[in-house]
Image (cartoon, rainbow, N blue to C red; front, side, top):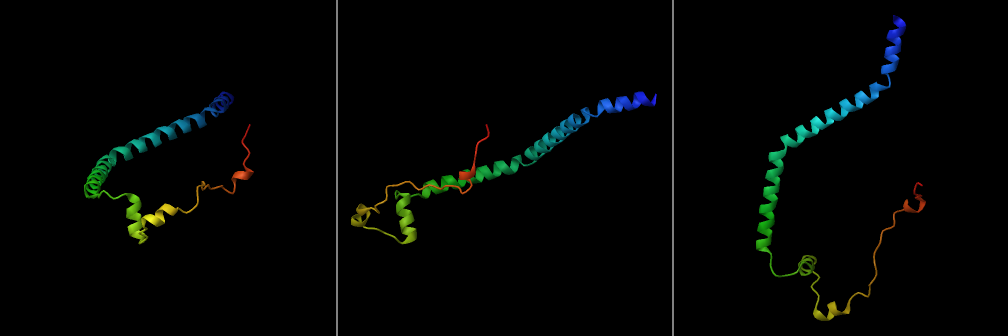
Length: 107
């Protein structure tokens, strides 16, 4: 009788990780659902505030462009003559990650 019980336990061992993963998945899904429902009103309030702020900014915006506003903020008002000169740069600025050169894709 003990042999049959031991055999049944050994047969159930491969199923245990599957059952544990399923329980973990269900518990994490429940946690996510709880967090989503408990913060719904807060997210709606934040979105409403952002929409009100965006509408207020759009009403206050002048006809000036963003570039002119940045120049005003920096104190770099340029004249027509200076802006027509340009800075002589027509290139592309790129960033090369230092670890990229050692990267080898897996087959």
